[in-house]
Image 1 (tube, rainbow, N blue to C red):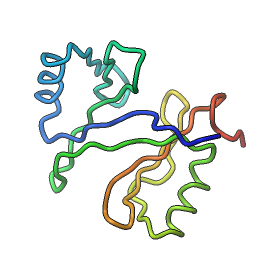
Image 2: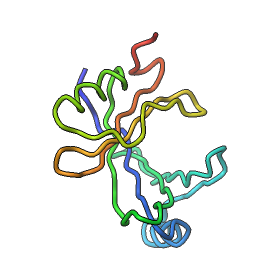
Image 3: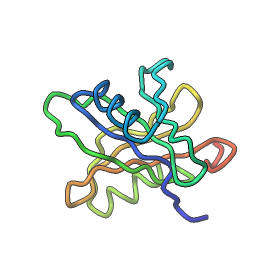
Length: 124
């Protein structure tokens, strides 16, 4: 199995304004009707990946983050930390059953690890 980029995520200090801008520019549909208030983006295309918008914490800049598909989030976190990465958000189960973690690589770039039960995750 390869490690495909599963989705993008925009971290924005003004998430509603960011959503309005990209919706107006590209015609993206943005849906915040979920238990976490996440602004899920549907680009309207079957090409490429879908994404979302999270509010940036007060101390964080605006940035874009990629999530890579892995079969085991905890094992990927262990490999990444062994290579010098720093764990920001530990492996977390999401309401729909997916699992994710967020890290900084050794150069400080933020990235995410993602698995989807039944599609990519090693079942435990």
